[in-house]
Every structure is written in C-alpha cells, then in structure tokens.
Image (cartoon, rainbow, N blue to C red; front, top):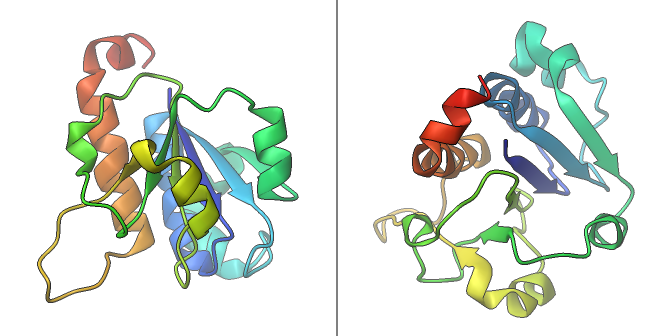
Length: 156
C-alpha cells in the first residue's frame, strides 16, 4: 500500500480525516512532530470517527528522524503549490511515500529544493491559493491507487 507523511500538521480535524482515509485505503500514516495538537484530542478522534484505533500510525520526533529511518528517497513525492508539475504526471508505485506539509506553512523549502524533481502540485485556478489538506491528500492518494489498481485490488 502507500504511505502518507504529514509534516507538522496543525489542524486536528484534517489529521483525523486523513487517518480515516488511510484506514479505508490501507495506507500507513506517518506524523512528523512537532504537531499542532495532541493526538488524543477529541477533534482528531471525532474526525477519524471509530477508525482512529485502526490506523497504521507511525509518529516521528522530527523530519530528520524520518529521513534517517528511510534513507532511500527515490520513492518520495512532495505535494506543494511551489511547482508546476501536476501530480498526475508522476508514476506512483505501491509503497511510495506521499508527503504533505503543514496547513500553515507547507513543506519546508529546503526539502522542496533537495527533491525538486519529486515535487507535485494539484492544478487550481488563480482564484485560490491552496486546497484543504485532507482533500489534497485524497486526490493524490487515489491517483496513486488508480495507477496501481490491479495490484492494489489484490491486497484488499
């Protein structure tokens, strides 16, 4: 399946909704501290409804700890508004890591610069600056599933 990595998420409702998405798709959820909330907060549990205890959840103390534990970065993809590469131009494989940044500041610029060829965006009009984190995660995760549906289906 796939890996969803949230770098310093700030809004518990988004994380709860993404947790629910992960349970329903078989994705692992990686949370990179610092978090803008306590994982035990009611808002996270309420958004995740009765799914929260079913999440394959990994919590990392820092992005450096995550990168140390996952030294092979060729299957990392970073969602950002700071690129012109649409997410659907990337080829995803099961096991890929799909990164999403904080609702307030996105993915740190030094990471985007280091992995510039692995950055992706969701096309939008000029009227808005970004989409909700949970919506963005769902759009990109389901594209990855679509591209791998035959093997994904076997794991269901």
